Every structure is written in structure tokens, then in C-alpha cells.
Amino acid sequence: DNDNDTTDSKESSIVEWVVSCFDESSGGYGAEVGHDGHLLYTLSAVQILAMADQLDKVPVQRVTKFVASLQQPDGSFIGDQWGEVDTRFTYCAVSTLSILQQLHNDDIIAPIDMDKAANYILQCRNLDGGFGAVIGAESHAGQVFCCIGALSILQRLDVLLLLLSPSSSGATTRLEWWLAERQCDSGGLNGRSEKQADVCYSWWIISALSILGRIPFISQKRLASFILKCQDPDDGGIADRPDDMPDVYHTFFGIAGLSLLGLLHNHSNHNQPTRRRIDPIYALPQDVVERLGLKAQVIQHDDDDHDEPLDPRLERYNVLRVP
Image (cartoon, rainbow, N blue to C red):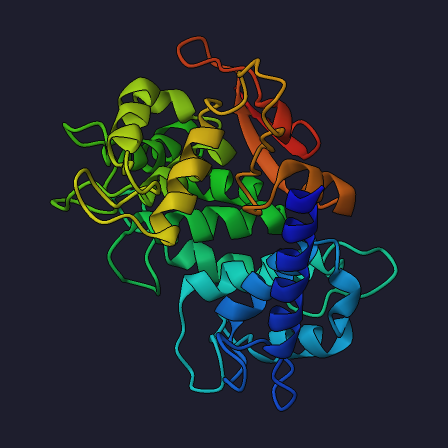
């Protein structure tokens, strides 16, 4: 009982702090109390409050207006008033609006131009199959997740398939293989060519492959081994790579990657708390996504060489079946 009381107290204090980070002048959330509102921190705040089942503390209309005000004429999004454009911000915008029931709500008109947002993302696609932060920028695994995740929430993955190739399979494979080629000799994944493996890409890449229905394109066993080698056996936590200092950032992404690989949910010890599965699109526990009724689109391939059963956590979404 004392443990439960402590947990409830910590959650309440976290919720209180997140609420206090709301920026009255902009209508978004800042990184700290008194900071300017920014799309990155607005999504983080909404995600935290969603997990705590405290979305009633969000001034939905003000946040919606803030997010919508940041969409540019070409469909892209800036992060705040200072004007930086990045496909990360597009993902933050559409994910925030979806969680707040403002994107796929039959009772209201979408506050952003979803077609323009999707078209801008598609223009950030490169010849190697990846996506960059802006049009013409180098492909990066983090940006690939943001672009694929945003298209998934916008339910525009079918447009991606059509634009990649008349037959859809050839150029789609460029994207999938670009992701697969991120696996290094260590088993870990890097964010772009000629870079070291880093645990954080266990999330960015596996989540994108999950949405695309291509997790088997990498060695899951070798990746899991890499993540586990990055643990600190004495103090706990997970680092970016073996023998480095662990931090909260990489601990989250390491655990999230193991969850997407299905390696955290097969225990039989009933004395342990239930380990909640993470959703690869919204980066929220699966039960939270289900409670909110969030929508998205995912791909399932029905080809002979890589036929993979659909991940059960994705069955609730609009499934785009590709021959």
C-alpha cells in the first residue's frame, strides 16, 4: 500500500508540473515552467497527461489553435514562433491533434490541412528511400519515423505507396532496405551511414519497420543482444552503447525497442507488475491508445518471401494490405 501511495504521489506531482508548463501567451507547452510553447514539448505534455488519464487538464481549443497556427503555406510545420521547419514538428503536430481528438473527429473540421501536410512529407523523401528534416536534407532514421508516423496518423500511407512506384514494391523496398541497412556489425542500429550504433534507434527504426510491416528485415536477436549489452548491471538504466553512462533517454528507447520486438511480455512471474506494450505509432502504452480510440494506418505485406502476421497491437488500425 505504501508503494502505491508513493507512486500515486509521484504521478500527481508530475501531472501538476506538466500542467504548470503551459504557456498562456502561445497556447502550447514549454520545456520548463515559464518557457515559450513549442510543438516538441506540447506533444510530450499531451502524451504524459494521456498516460495519466488527465487530458481533461488540457485546454484543448487553445492547444489546437497553437498547433494549427504553426502550419506553413507549403504544409510544413514550424516548431514555434522562431520559424524552424522540421519534419519532427509535423509528427508532433498531427500526433498531438489526434490524441486530443481533433484530427479524425466527424463532428469537427480538421484544424490543419492534412493533404498539404502529407504532400510536404512526401517531398522530403530522398532517392535512397529515406526522409530528411526538410526538402533535400540528408536521410536520417529519426526523420524517417517522424515522416512515416505522421503519414500513418494522417492515414496517407497509401499515397506513399502510389508515389514510390507504379507497382509499389520496388521503391518501397528502397525505404525498407535503407532502414534494414542501419543494422551494424554489433547488432545495433545507427541513424545514418557511417555512424556508430545507438540504442535510441532501436525505437526510431523498429517503430518505422513495424508500421511498414517489415520488422523481419533486421536481425531481431542481434538487436536485442546489443540493447541488453548497453545495460548498467550495477546502477541500472541503459546507455547509448556498451560501457557508456546510462541515461533516461536511452533507457526509454531501449525498453521501447525491446517491447516492439515482443521481448518484454513473455514472463510468467505473477508477482511482477504487468508490462504494458508500447504502440509504435503514438509511443504510448497500447491500453492508452485503445482507451482514447486513436486512429492510424499500417501496412501488411502478403508476399511469399516476407509474409509476416500482423502485430496484434496494430489490428485496431486501418490495415493497408500490399500484395
